[in-house]
Length: 137
Ligand code: HEM
Image (cartoon, rainbow, N blue to C red; front, side, top):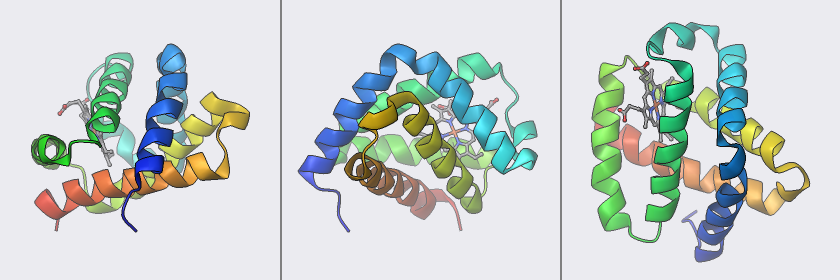
């Protein structure tokens, strides 16, 4: 299913609501990710707080860029190439996507409606597929 304009808007507005608590959201994300898949932990070599800030910053660029896919796609391709070098595998996108949904739910509470959740599922799928098709077998 292609991402609709309404889903783009939902992702952008819900992301804006977690931005003020980006650091906690990133903490929740990594805690959950390593619970889902402890073997991913050694892949993360730099300071996890700095890493969390980078993740949120890129999600912001990605969500903002959804309206301009011609610009976003090359950015995601380069990001994908770097992720191959980090030792990331295609299968790792699943726990990452699930940890992201979990962190968003914690951060947004009641505002994480089914419709908002579905919008994030589609957007994450788009980002992950764009990255995987470019660099992962
Ligand atoms: C939606 C998809 C993803 C986004 C937007 C994203 C974003 C980022 C960003 C912005 C960085 C900072 C360095 C850079 O820009 O190259 C990074 C690093 C990294 N990401 Fe991702 N990432 C994604 C998916 C994944 C997945 C599926 C994994 C698998 C575990 C992963 C693991 C890592 C690792 C290991 C690093 C390097 C950490 C370090 O040097 O300590 N990422 N990611």
